[in-house]
Image 1 (spheres, one colour):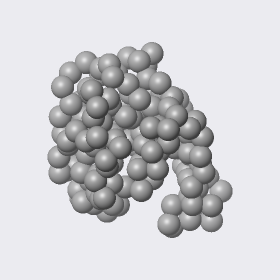
Image 2 (cartoon, one colour):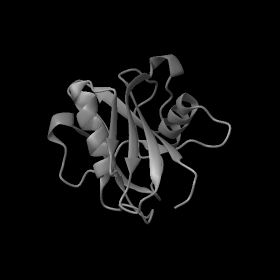
Image 3 (cartoon, helix red, strand yellow):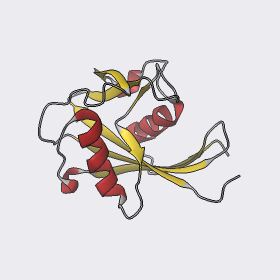
Image 4 (cartoon, helix red, strand yellow):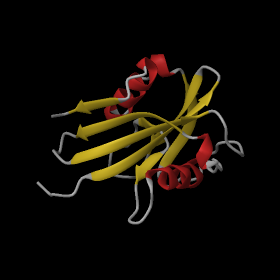
Length: 143
């Protein structure tokens, strides 16, 4: 196993009783499944900066860093065994209308009730969303 732990950020965009999910496509990982706007933290970047960047790159919106709330942190190990730390942020405030800004990696976006996630939601994201709904600040999965 590699010694490096990947740090991920996931952004829960809240609109009324719905959150935004994107359908992965052409990435080689979980294609056809739904996930939050998300990605890895780049070297030299904070988790907040990464969340703002990923939201801009994936769904074309601008988020004020002060508008992000940390709603969950997960120490996750996926099926391949690689450890990850997932930071889940939520906000109901942003500029612009979310669009599919990465059509080469995404088949489309849609608003879903977080308590009724489609069965084809990426499990890593589904676990984080479930904890967000219960207000649990930390979890481990896959250990």
